[in-house]
Amino acid sequence: MRNGQTHVTRRGALALTGGAAAAGMLGAGARAATPATLQLSWLHSVQFAGSYIAQARGYWAEEGLDVTLAPGGPNAPVEPPVVSGRALVGVSAADYTAAAVAQGAPFRIIGVAMQKNPFAVASLPENPVETPQDLPGKRIGMALANMPVLEALCTLNGVDIDRIEIVPTQYSAAPLLAGEVDCLLCWATDLPVAMAVQGVESVTMLMADHGYALQSQTYIATDESLRTRRAELVGLMRGETRGWAAYRADLDAAVATTLEMHPDANLDPRAQRMQAERQVPLMFSELTEARGFGWFSAATVEETIETLAVLGHDVSPDLWDRSILEEVHAG
Image 1 (cartoon, rainbow, N blue to C red):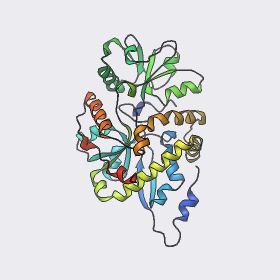
Image 2 (image 1 turned 180 degrees about the horizontal axis):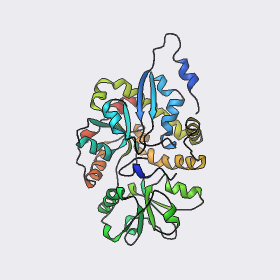
Image 3 (image 1 turned 90 degrees about the vertical axis):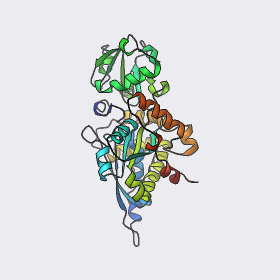
Image 4 (image 1 turned 60 degrees about the vertical axis):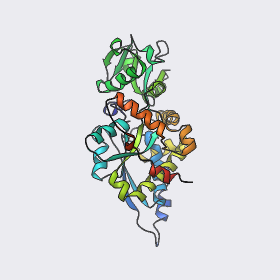
């Protein structure tokens, strides 16, 4: 799961077929579907189950699209295929997009899947970290690449980072369970899940609850695509919206789709089910209830801009374009 500086360091921790329906749409007189690629931000898992459902149940085929889901990974960054046109849309994060735009990339954020950033600090109940003010005096295990994330959290909450002992670790719960550190910087949907699968209770402090308002799992497209491939963007995002609605309605089916579509991904069914459940409050909010999946408002954009400034990125609201979502959710 890619967000902030974490992408390269985090994966180690952790279909319902719609073919007949899709094939039926290609009968006599039907137009051939338009190819389009959605570049994911990490390896296949239930993190992207809404997209798998959209593909498996033929939601994109109904939009006239033949969508390829390209997995990401440490050697498959999101931005290059989108800026080159090989991918129509990419799943990124606001800080990555801001950095790319600063280097001249013509991106716009056209939707926000995760309404709350998934970064968290995980600890054990006997020595909990429940607020940022609990961090001084603690040993935190993390990848050094994630230092800007911790620095931003401390800045936003008036915490002296020099009073926190930084312990470089692999992306694993093992250092916490071995007592080598007091807490871990991670995503709320993975290392806490890995511990839960082992029967270990943990305390998860979601950084989004303490001012870290960085939009994650965002959809990016180029200015050119917004001008010349608008109908395809609307169709792709409409299928995404339907896929994630189906995910939320039936998490068991979402997990089953993920496992059936990606049998070689070595995914643990129990962990995938837990992750699916823990994603729900991150992806759906009062805002999405009122306006629809992926929505962002002027207020949530401003909060993200403020967090980006702490991370060293200077952006304006022009980075966001809501016109695709407005068409998707019209009426």
